[in-house]
Image 1: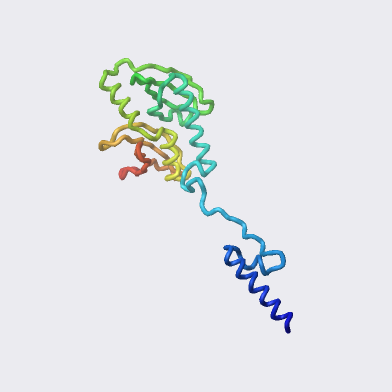
Image 2 (image 1 turned 30 degrees about the horizontal axis):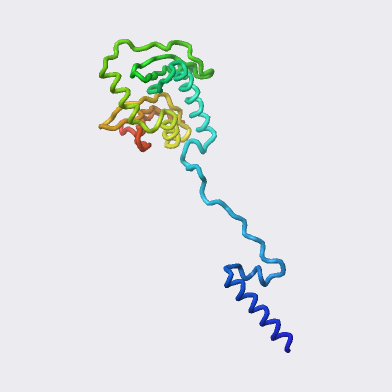
Length: 204
């Protein structure tokens, strides 16, 4: 009887000690302590809707980046402002703008990301055209690859055929043509400052 009372008192003391220390009382009363609950991360550091989270979409963006990098490398210090597919997707017609605001055009092969024609500087641009290009580039927070990723996240399985930096209703935007798996072209707009994506109501 005395042993039972002493044993109960010791168990109670252990329980109080564990509680006071912020520990789990089970670990004090069970022979070897309860096994720790494994930590499971909730959520992902990458937005599930982001194109970068999907290997297929990431590959599509990477191909666009390869073409863009070839174009900007051909004109040092330039920034890509437009690209459009030609010859059933085998070629990209690309425009870049240099640090003086001059536009340069070239053709880049899709498969090899090799410049096969150009670059050719646009000689007929006036000071206003150059200033407008530079203002758009200065205002844009997203580049063409980031805008493409936004569109591909909004149109799963889509194929981008054109992307162009422009102004729309006093905003700098990326205008993007994308073809979904069903084949009907959609015109999308990505706000170049905050990344908001909208679909043109007149899209097919």
